[in-house]
Length: 400
Ligand SMILES: Cc1cc2nc3c(=O)[nH]c(=O)nc-3n(C[C@H](O)[C@H](O)[C@H](O)COP(=O)(O)OP(=O)(O)OC[C@H]3O[C@@H](n4cnc5c(N)ncnc54)[C@H](O)[C@@H]3O)c2cc1C
Image (cartoon, rainbow, N blue to C red; front, top):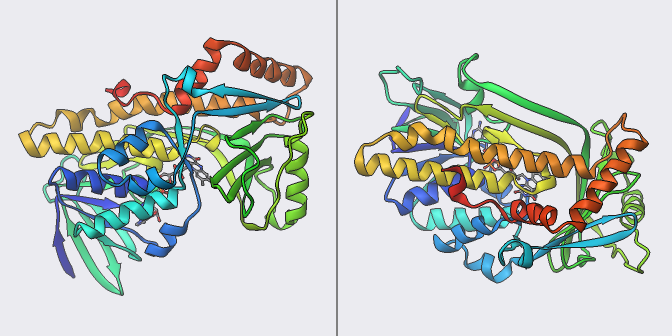
């Protein structure tokens, strides 16, 4: 068994784990990151792409935002499309000049892993059989992470463990049953998403409500479109040849003003189930959960990555306070602080999802109600402002 020691042992090299490791490094705190996938896999995994203003500011201020500033597409609004008409929500006017930046999650990951490795940070990729121990409140030993790398067993002991290993990771299930309370809603639909080599057909995102189901036009760069349609969670992707997906997108995004959807070769496609999920608390003893390990939002609000970043900003500050002064009050408050933001983001993501999707069992009344809500949101300055304020991201200190 090879033994290693660090201050913070981090499980998972997704956005939460890498941002945490980066922020800790800037505070002079040592960490080691353990990741079960290869570096190439995590750097190519296509996922989120909408960064809140606060996430962008954090990356720029901490020295990992150079490429993001150069290549990211800054948007000062989104479009809501229904009844074949498009309505613009203007963030510049409604959200104090703030915007969002389109920059793919895997590019964020590349920038962060490059920065960590260039600074001498340790990330162990392609590890196996990861387990966490001795983090329980009354454990007399130091917390430890055990794993295998190239067949060899390792034990990493640390002062604390950060469980940043996503929804399917091992950290959350390692907490004894009965400790965590689970709050969950599984939606009766999924998103079928494609990545296409086609210039985006709109400068800004289009969220479309349609009697055949929701559609979203998004993008990853000036040459790559990201498009989604609502589908059944049981849908088999094999039943969706590219031509059928484009046909459905054309139908759901159609307008009366001559707008055209540009097609292009589909380079990736997949089906993502939709769920809202929160555990409380987000800490047990010396293990702190952050990001998707602690909560999931449906992607309609574009919040998952941003929420993961918000959690680890709180956590990094709490660790920093502990190592500087020995005081534990911020660590003790970690869960409460994060959950205030988590629940507001859950509410917003649920609201966007409920307003824009068709629900099985809904009748004509419900559809008229959804249309009235869209009409209200796009017609009332107060309602548009509420959407804008949430979409660009609530201020970080709201949770404090
Ligand atoms: C299709 C799709 C679209 C999305 N769109 C958006 C969007 O537009 N905006 C947005 O903000 N969010 C979006 N999200 C959500 C966003 O991608 C996630 O919320 C985000 O990745 C969470 O980051 P994380 O670091 O908490 O978890 P993850 O990114 O899941 O990272 C966890 C890491 O832990 C690793 N791991 C897992 N188990 C172990 C183990 N046992 N040992 C070691 N390592 C382990 C995983 O390989 C992974 O690298 C989207 C998600 C999907 C799937």
